[in-house]
Length: 109
Image 1: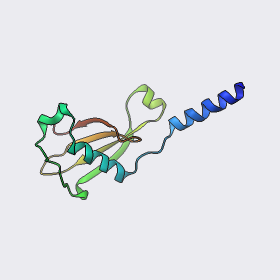
Image 2: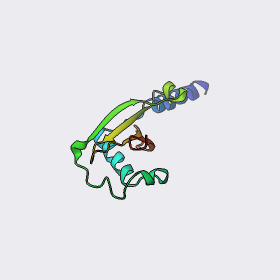
Image 3: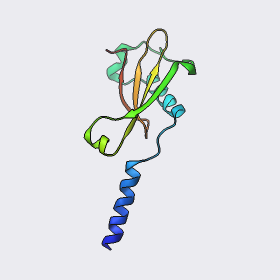
Image 4: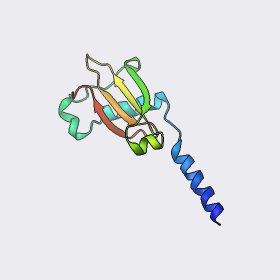
């Protein structure tokens, strides 16, 4: 019984340690969605519909590690997607596994 429980615990940990990462295209699509539906705390920094219909070549995406002890232990990753549009370059940071919005910088600094 104990061996089965340890085996299940190891399998769950291995799945949490390395779940599938979003592809570059998926990360760009998710970041674009976040730019089109900007969180309330950043609405004043953007004009309405400012990032609608941005050409695909204006996006750059970089995969990197997330900060924090727990994230380092589990080797968690994040996508940093930068949009170059009309002289502005906001960067949207999303979770590399779920596409969840983490933070944004560029225009705000």
